[in-house]
Image (cartoon, rainbow, N blue to C red; front, side):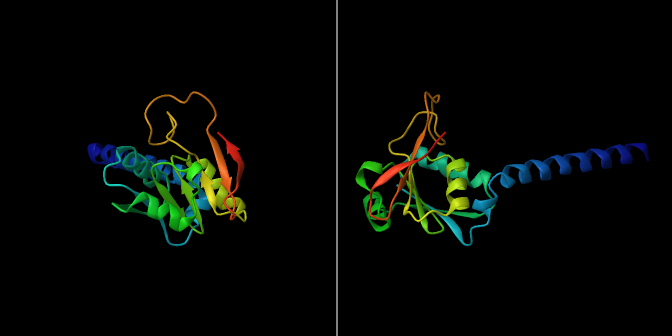
Length: 158
């Protein structure tokens, strides 16, 4: 009887830890999680860092994440209005916005909370230490707001 009680307490403790750890990471992104529909990540078949970024997003949010492999990156970027100077290796679509590159979810959360009248946000290139990228972060990540006319300005720094 004592072993059954101890076993039950251990199971309850493990379930509690599991439930709270999942909810705590997701609750940090409540505005992302309130998006209706799916988050789409458009990437090439051969991009390993895009796979890692996709797993990062999928592990942090409760919204369904759909991965589109193999589309021509230039076609997707053109379809959503990503300026050439803002390009990276993959394009994410969330709500009415594009998110270009290895943008940390904190910036996406800000985007979804504020809902500015822009086309999307971008972090050009493939900065070391960014989500999905190897190495250590060596300075601020600069995320740009891309206006509907293709011009850009600083959105935030992380």
